[in-house]
Image (cartoon, rainbow, N blue to C red; front, top):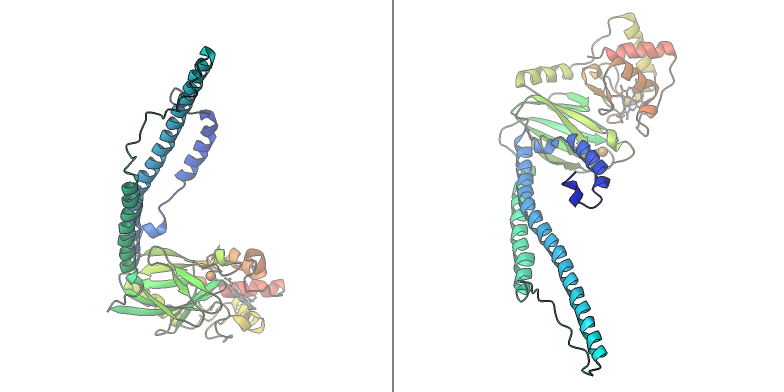
Length: 369
Ligand SMILES: [Cu+2]
C-alpha cells in the first residue's frame, strides 16, 4: 500500500471507508430533487442554487482552515528551533565566562504575506462577501417561496385534505367523494388543496409535487399542486404529531383526466351491494358492531363524521392504515384483529368478534370496490 503508507494509521481507516462507501452506495436522489410538478420544480431549483453556492464557499473556507493549521505548525516548529538556538548561544556565553547577558530572543524569519493585510482580508472575506451571498440567497428564496401563494387561474378541481392522528382524509366536496390515505389528481391540471387538521398540527408533504405545508387546527391553508406526469407519488406527515407520526403516510395518484373522472364517479357512488351470503352477513356484522360507530360505509351507515377513515370503497385503495400495510386480504384481517399490535397508539381499538363474524366481515370489506 504505497499510497496509504503516507497516511498515519492508514489501516485503521479501511473498515470505516468500506462502511461509508457501502452506505453511500444506498443513497438515492431525494424525492424533493426529482420534481414532477411546477411548485416542486421551483423549490428544487432553489436547492440547487444554494448547493452550488455552498460548494465553492466550503472549498474555500476549508482550504483556508487547512492552510492555517499547516502554517501554524510550521511556525511553531521554527520558533522551537530558534529557542533551542538561543539556549545554545546562552550556554556558550556562560562557558566562556563573558558576562554579556542573554541575547534578545530572535523571531522566526517566516512572515506571513497576510501580515499587515489581515484587517482588510477579514472585513471583505468574512463580512462583505458573506453578506452579499446571504442577501442574494434570501431574496431568491423568498421569491421562490411565492409558489405557496400562487393560485393559477385554471384551477380544475378542489380537494380538502384533513390530517388526523394518524391518517388522512381526502374529500372532493364538489363531487360527493370522501376517501382516506389516497388522493387522486388529474395529470397536468392544477388542483386546489385545502389543508385542515382534526386534532394537532400535521404537515402535508408530497416532495415531488410541492413543499411542506402545515395543517393547523382551526385554520385552513391552501396550496395548488399539479402533477406533470402520471404516476404514484409518496406523501408524508412532516410535523411530529404523536406516537404513530412515522406511519402517517399517503399516496397521490396522478391519472389522465378521463381516468380520474371515472375514479371520481366510482368513488361518489354508494358501496356495492354484497352478492354472496357470507358478505351479506359481513355487512350485518359491520352494522351491528362497534365498527359502525366510527366508520362510515355510504349507503349502509352514517358514523360520527371525521372519526375514522370512510370505508365505502376500501378495496380500491392500495394501502391500509396510512400506508402501514399493503391492502391485501391477509393484512386487512390482521389489521382488524390487532390494530394496536400493527400500529400501537393508533386510534382504532381491537373489536371483539367471533371467528365466524370475523370471516364474514372480512369477506364483505374485501369486496368494497
Ligand atoms: Cu402527523
